[in-house]
Length: 186
Image 1 (cartoon, rainbow, N blue to C red):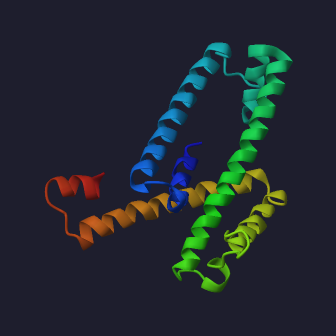
Image 2 (image 1 turned 45 degrees about the horizontal axis):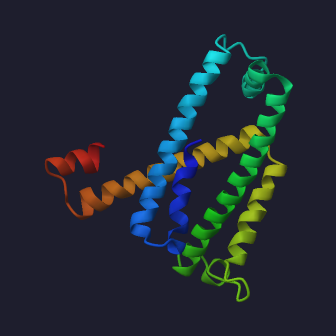
Image 3 (image 1 turned 90 degrees about the horizontal axis):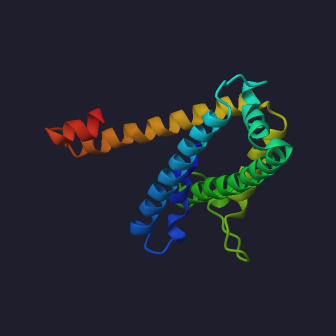
């Protein structure tokens, strides 16, 4: 649930005053999402304290049925579908933007990923590539897809942490006292 907060940074080139607004947006999104998750978990425990769900994978349906009957269950299912659609669109935009930036910088093939539509000024080929990969979700099981996403997130965050260690601890040699704690241990 927390993986989306960093997608804000992928659109920083379009932001006004990105050095100030992007970190603020990331922190606000993280804190607000954290508060919402904690409050909803607490309320859910108050409404359904037994945790004896019909099916653990769809426990929220049992919770909504207990809390407000069929209406609340239908309402939250509709809200979930709308939220999933919004999340998918935001994910597509952020991944396409990353692929475009990598193509523009020559990390990926520039002619394909670095291409921008003259009419719409959008990275059309990167968007199409992300869309094609996303369509695989229609033929892959949800369990496999969740495993791939979890593994991908683990690898991505691991590489980010290792790059911080390399940049500060190895390259800049900030490895004494506070640098040892902040650049290596943490």
